[in-house]
Structure formats: C-alpha cells, structure tokens
Image 1 (cartoon, rainbow, N blue to C red):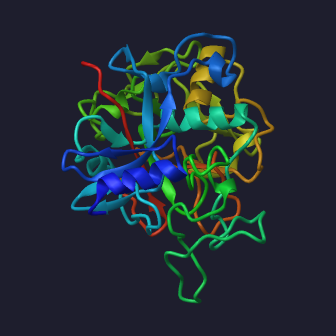
Image 2: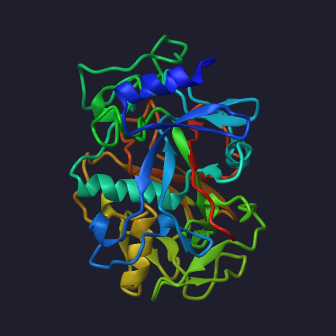
Image 3: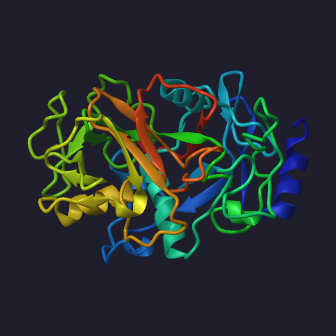
Length: 358
C-alpha cells in the first residue's frame, strides 16, 4: 500500500473503469462509479424523473461511488481493498462512523443506492451471486473463493474480498462490484422500521452526515401509502396512512395498517413481497427504488429470503445475506436487529459522493 501511484496503474491495467479514491488521510479505497439514472433508465416505468439515489440536499448529483469490496476498518476508518477479511462485529452506528470519519461525502451505503444496483442488474439480465454456502455459492460446485476465516470444524466462513468468480461481480466483469450477495450481511443507511412502520430519509440525504440517522433524529420520515409522499411520523409507528410492514398469507405485504404483529419476526422470499390495495403506484415505486420490493416476481436466482420485525420499537436493515445460509441473495434484507446488533456475519460497505451544498 505504500506506492499508491503504482497501485493505481496496476488497477487500471486490470479494471480500467475503477478508481482509487483517497480519504482525508490520503488513504486509498478501490471504488466503482455509478452514473446518474432516471426511473426509465432502470426500467422502472416510463418516468424521466431522476432516481432518488442521485438526489442529495434537493440537488441532482452526477453519480455515486460504491466500494468495490466489503470494507475493513483501520484507524477507525472504512476501506475498500481486495483480498481482505471484511470487518464484522460492527453495529449500525459504528458502521456509519467508520464511513463518515473518512471525510465529507463518505457514507454508509444507503438503501436507495442498493436499490439502484438491484434495478440496474435486473435491467441487464444478471443477478450476482456469492458466498452463501461456506466459501461458495449453493448453485456452483466448481467455483470457490479464498477463505478469510474458518469455523471450528474448519469449514470456510467469510471469504477474502473480491476472490470469487465473475458471477460474484454485479456486471460479470472484474470492473464490477464484488460480493453483494453473501459473505457477510451489509448494513445500509437511510432506512429503518418502527413497530413495522417503514421510515426513510428524504431522497439520498443519508449520504450526507449532516442528516443524522440517530434513533431520535427528526430526519426520519414515514411514507404515505396512497401517494408515496413523505410525512412526519408520530413516533409510535402508528402514523395515519403510512406504509407499514404487515404479514398476510405468509408474505410481507406493504399496507397502511398492520393486521398481524403477533410473532414479531417474519420471513419470506423477496419475489413474493406484495402490496395491499390502498398502496398507490408512487408508493410502490418508492419501495422498489429502496430495494424493499420486487419490480416483478421473476428476479433470479430465487433464493432471496427477507426478514422483518413489526413488533419492535426500532429495527435497522442490512442486505445481501451471509456465508452459511443458502437462501441468501443479493435482494435479501433483514430488519430483525436493533441498531446495536453486531456479530460475525454482519459487515458493511462505504460509498462516496461529491456533496452538493445543503
């Protein structure tokens, strides 16, 4: 890592569209650029409105940079580097802090950014896979990645970042984003549930640390079910007319009220998530943009199990699954843990934008 200019030249030789970005301490991360797109660009209807991931502080941005690799932490800062054991046992607030410590514009990857990647991959006909079966994907017998950690029986658990086959990259090339499926769950910013009521920050404001994501932050907004506008939540998860996560006919159903919170945590496949009759098209599109609902029921591969808890005061979300659960997929999400949750299968990924003025 000492000769960063030489590292940049080597990167360009193998991954010409990637860049090494430096934080405020002059330390490098390998990043992949995602240019601005509209809903129509992502095959999410015909609207030419800019996709929310590309709007920060009310201003459109040209694009955002995503860590090519799941992150490690050095000196309290997040870094995207190949061949590493990704950082785990980190909670939601610690993940945010490790990203924002790098300087202005650095942030924990957000729900809208993750949703943009799901939509882009669906449009382009390829959903990346990854380590969901102790060092390999459950559908692949001949491909494995380099182990970064092993369990007590010497089975591989986490794999070294970026060492999987091309099927583990979002665009099937070495220029792509690695390990979005499996290996470790990834905390995502700008989204939470409160007693099952889904709450988000405006557009991609979660990319700017001036918009706090603390439990008591006034930045959190509920989503109006009828038209997708953002409204001030009542603090109890019972905001009138807001989108809530209900459990109906053994699947997550977005609705304006909750009929079943009896068990707390529920799970179903991403492809069967649906909407109650009172949820309008704009609200549906917003949930799809967040990567919290499918555009169609045909996303493949089909193993994209999702979890949520509609009986707890606050639950944060992580994405992508982990190494020992073959039902994990790129579209998987879990809202079963509090922001304080931390264990050996939860990590994170930083992203970067050039901040517009607030």
